Length: 159
Image 1: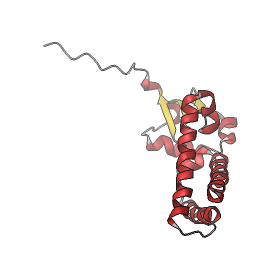
Image 2 (image 1 turned 135 degrees about the vertical axis):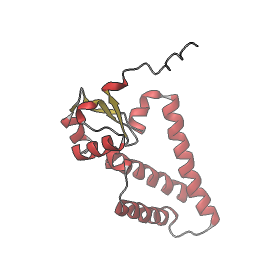
Image 3 (image 1 turned 45 degrees about the vertical axis):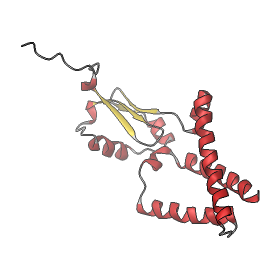
Image 4 (image 1 turned 60 degrees about the vertical axis):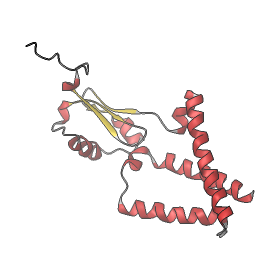
């Protein structure tokens, strides 16, 4: 039972850490950050199992993490108001072609990172960006002024 309680505490701590790190950071991991997370995983294992290398200890720890993950997913499905707390809310970072500096500062999103993401989407000029949204998973969605179509396919020519 001690392993389950330890897993619960560590799960809550890791959830808080990933929320505090910020979504723009989670979108792309540097080599150092990847190594840091792998090392953190080993430290978490040691903290949860207290060097218990038994199969039972591993199953309890992984099972607790899995149940908590499913529980959070169910909670945000069943109670939609909790979704903003659990996974976050998309944030508008560019409106009418103008970056929203306070929103970008709050989420630690640099203008340079915004421009890189725009170039990766094939957007050549910032003046083409009507809206940009920082999604809860750290990705940035861009809406350009040319995207004003309804999404319906054009009518094929009669002939």
